[in-house]
Length: 430
Image 1 (cartoon, one colour):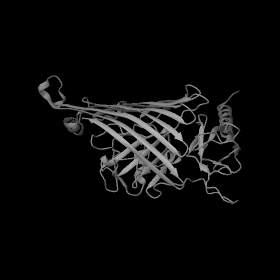
Image 2 (image 1 turned 180 degrees about the vertical axis):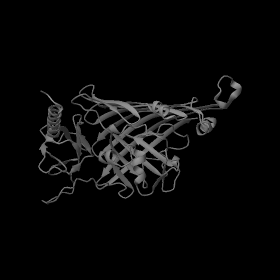
Image 3 (image 1 turned 30 degrees about the horizontal axis):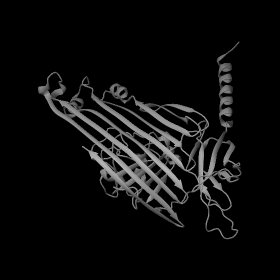
Image 4 (image 1 turned 45 degrees about the vertical axis):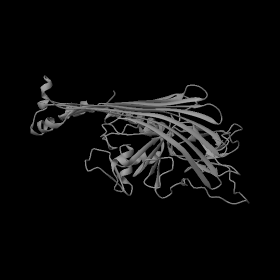
């Protein structure tokens, strides 16, 4: 006779087996080591996993390495070779969808005699070592209260405060205005990284950028790079992951306020892709909670990277956000009616598209970037929310901002010095 005790015992054993199996699952990581200047593969370099002693591999004649049996987690990888400076990567999440890792190492021109080097799993910032903070994947995932939102994560840094309106992501760095911050993504300027943005500021309640696509972020609060013009308070420089050249991976996520679908892979041997799409269901939650306003947003981003040759690459990038906020006029009550009396409906679209061509010529790196930004903001309000007559119209705001940017940059390594020069042209239409 099967009793409830037998059923519970069977389920417990099954769960234990599942837990043991899940704990025993390890993954492999594949990547490539290349020379930073010549862009050629580096053979017989040693690549180790920082934090796991003895776990590593050597590259083959094509610069390819593969490290097996790595427990799931967030790691950095270090590449070393005699005659080269050791290089430590940004953080990578090792899982079933681990990306292909490309490590650039640079020749050590000052190498004179045999020395003993003790490697460190931390990366040193050569430019702006005091005022720049590198934000890795581990900090994004584990920051308390950050909710994987970059604007909320950097609030904890010295010299950074936020808007007194608690639901907004306006950054106030060293007492500056929220409009004095600049955002870049793989070298392309992004005017705003938040949904329901306020024109003339940089904040909003929810970030447009999906953290799943981020490889690393450099946050400058001073001593801004020469090629990041126009910043007076801070610079957030996003670097996205590259698509996986070996396999296609897709991911669906149900979050606290949205559902998302993302993927990465390759279109050919030389072209990789990365994309993400998100749709919120806040309007359903807010209606169920009896709130007088019903926000809704959709966003998407993509990255295409093509290696035209060993020394030339082209990146296409896009970011789009669509925001709508309706009024829940069915909601009754003194507080709800007060909010409904002044709150307008909001329709907002913003997008950025851009292309960046980069040429590596030994100690020189040249890049040409072309991008276009667009913002369309519309607010409408009727007296007593009565839309039956145009006579009740009290507010109709429509504002369009467009900006096209063409930028040329050249970077030259002169021993311990780096020389950067370039020019930028902007055309704005308001």
